[in-house]
Length: 261
Length: 295
Image (cartoon, one colour):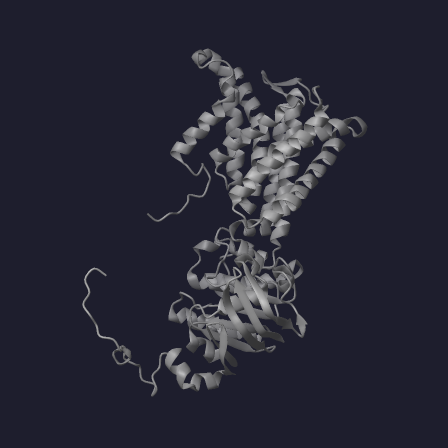
């Protein structure tokens, strides 16, 4: 089990981003982590995978443990070797390399089963098959997201941390990515899913956390979150009775005509 | 005609040495974004080491040992001097490499002394004749060695696990880190490879005229080469290096006949003229990535 306890993260020695976050990811689950922009979702992932260093961030309190062993003092290579892999926000494929080479970089820590894993990835993402020699930068957005996920899967991680996999994708592709996440989970990889698209994330997750300005404000099974009136209003965009809300009702200021603004 | 051909071949020969030096610059630049101005000192160190080892070990073993030792030296410099500066602006690191260069050259100069040292290469100034064209043996050796090294390097970058990791790191460090690539290994490896190649180049430069305290200047010919080729491109470094060699050789052969008013030894300047022309037409070099900028 991957567990985060009372984690506090500071950037540049002054900016306190996470303020005592605790979170559990039990094996075999899909766990959703929701939150608005700037809530600290990506920072939490970085703290788990050891990528804080290059962003000048630092864990000042708390711990990240894997099966009870603290791992937050390790570097990213060690953490990947322990079976935790992050898919960075915005896909971040190596666009100058070919699809095949991208996957082989993903196998960096696990070169032994590379051939076999590449076949497995192409089975999982059939749209990448036949594009092995293609330059990765020319793939479509959805294919690039699949490649980024496939690249992460190459090291056979136990835990896959997905940062906004639906970012910038058309609704149909979002559905496809969602099904793939379920499939990856079925094949035995635990998934921590960071999403702004709460509907998508909660539809497949067993458990959900809501992060707000560096604190976990809600921690419930996904069905409860889906039924929660605040979540429905603020994250799913649904009104109290399931009707869409008009912004006219929210507006509390007087509209003024301004020139030059 | 034969004069032209042998001049071209001479140019390709020395050009391939420049290409080796340029590749060293490019490999370090690609992975760390730093231009390593200590390349000339590493080249000198490699050559001097061979001149000391050639007596007891014989030429080829001496070269192998010197290449390995120079690679280790470069790796040590990276670990001790450059590594603590990671995260600082690359400009600062570049200036530090100039410091390394001066310090290292001074140490090595102590081993050169006032004499000219010889590396004792088996190919002296003898020439072989192919169909009426005479080519010096050492130019053939330079070209062949460069070809072998470049081929090995390309295979390494294309197929090996570490080579791929180096390309990935050059492209996007954070993503490479997230894949478990150890970026510090990549940095160290790129310095070691560049150091080894500088040593090979040093041996060939020294097989021309022996080693004195001035031959490090030859390594600076790699600068117009990398700028012509584009700082980030391995292909560019090779094309740039050979261009520099050929231009220099052709100018040396023909300038006194066609443009004597340029004065003697204009060939030394000619690579920089080519560099200026390339900079005016393609500021990012022939193979460099064009910087995408929104206006």
